[in-house]
Image 1 (cartoon, rainbow, N blue to C red):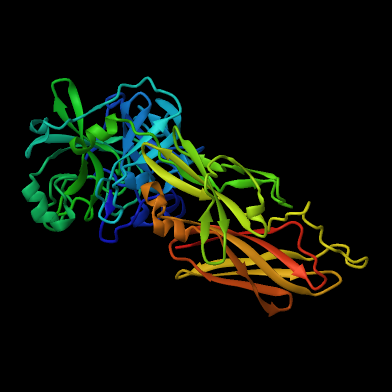
Image 2 (image 1 turned 135 degrees about the vertical axis):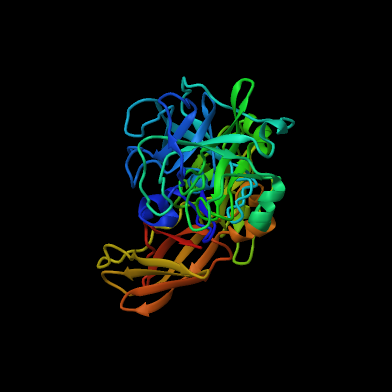
Length: 492
């Protein structure tokens, strides 16, 4: 559960680096009691890969529920920062004591956050983890649309989870906790929680504390992603997923849960993980492009399930980039139309969950009369110019990249770079928009000499994201740095 007094996101990094602070704690059940061994076989602990879930700092950070042999449902805010990096987390299914070795431990194959998740308002706060292999434990069924009678106002639901049993003491209990809480009406939830409560996405439940005490029953920091269950003819059904609240066991507001029935169809469609670029595409060969050379676009590294890749080649200019008509395969043969031009490829990965783009470095200028001339190196100039990274940072979308450029026998006459960029919010369907294509456009930059062999690239980025510069220096004799210096940067 997230404490909305500060709207703190609970990501893996926050838990690992700041687990001693209240806002980084995961929610636990207040005024519950210990569960019996094997009572909740579908309960899941989520923790950093390679760690012990009982570790108070680098262990369990969110809960979840097994809904199919290979799928776990949890809160989106638990794993939103890990989309594309499923290897960073593991789960154990069917454990009651965190310190025990019971249950099935699995790596995570992919993470799918609901496409309409809003991290600020915690709407659509639900995600699916696909496990690398099935587990033998019994899954829990979600309540379905039309089964509202199972979780109507006044129904006594059961919440479970690990974590601090006192809102003011961030101590992880070893034993899984459980408690019974009444589900509140939408009107009561809206009256106590205001516009933060969305009856299409949330339900609320709990027992309020008496004034001046903490005798209420509620989930708290760290129960995020854990189940709220209601009795049914078949046993139990998942009606809610622990999401957020104003404090823990408050005397005025209830805990808020993602309304499972609103997302049952999405969950049971088991959508594939959307495409996310992890390493930008590359080109081969990179050096000495000449007419007749066949360039190959290497797709880079991507996360996502069942991806289909398409390609588009571009000629890059100072003002705009122009797609090359008909150049839609992974290979492209340079022609006379490409002479003196710089070229790159744009790789688009697609599946039913989304679309993402990745642009390669670019090569050029293209020559029309044989191989690219070798840099002329005088007898005394045996190494040619070279550059090394000094620092790279961005502040308020203004970026500076400093490099040191030197030459053994002559002066450095200039330093230039090719910049590629991937906007953070240009994923999914948004990646193909005109503004995203413009934000991700390859650019050619010149550096300004600062003296003492230091040079500075100054540029602005239109959106939060990350990119890299391919830097080359040239000296007064006409030599060009043979191996470029690669510099990564990111801006928020």
